[in-house]
Length: 237
Ligand SMILES: Nc1ncnc2c1ncn2[C@@H]1O[C@H](COP(=O)(O)OP(=O)(O)OP(=O)(O)O)[C@@H](O)[C@H]1O
Ligand SMILES: [Mg+2]
Image 1 (cartoon, helix red, strand yellow):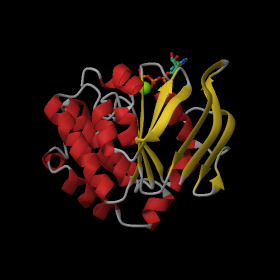
Image 2 (tube, protein in one colour):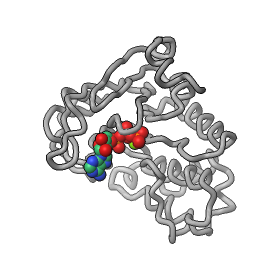
Image 3 (cartoon, helix red, strand yellow):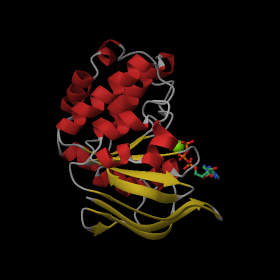
Image 4 (tube, protein in one colour):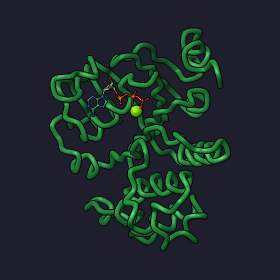
């Protein structure tokens, strides 16, 4: 579904990805783990084209999308749940969800109402919060809105950047239960996570990033048993 070859990208002259190659098959969940500052968010933001591609190739469903814009990527169904949620705090929960549904692709497919039904079925708590401003919600509820907003866009590929960041353990469990359900429905996902153990249990395949390069990759179950990975990322879990 998504193929990235030898991708270089970063911030102006400061390159943060030094030739990264990643493959995500249709219907698969792929974990991306690695230390702070390794380049995980940079990779996700470059895929969704919030950051420009320096060089390399990005192919989505067999088509070269390297030179497309962020809006084009959304139209293709590559949808991101950004690090730190990035909600519209002064808008209501309902307004945040509906904003996620704006693209010509989604309006052609199912109605906004039916997408909203799907999201509220996934996150029943949000129904009673519908008219509340997003900024007044707890961190866990905000994460649900951020995921709900992304799902309103009917993703073909969902990019999740640290969905459990800063949340209480019980809420983290809810986030992973939700991801498990989306996985069982066949949604293709790239999951960036600090909670490496939970991410690897959920995933089919995994990449480990270190200083802008892929330092290890393999079946998630193998990566979980890899000694170097255990030492670096699974020690305290
Ligand atoms: N806006 C920016 N401008 C310049 N450099 C940046 C910017 N954002 C990140 N970087 C640098 O790019 C590199 C990769 O950072 P990135 O945020 O992609 O890492 P990460 O793996 O997502 O880390 P974290 O686990 O902390 O989220 C780091 O060296 C970081 O300092
Ligand atoms: Mg990050």
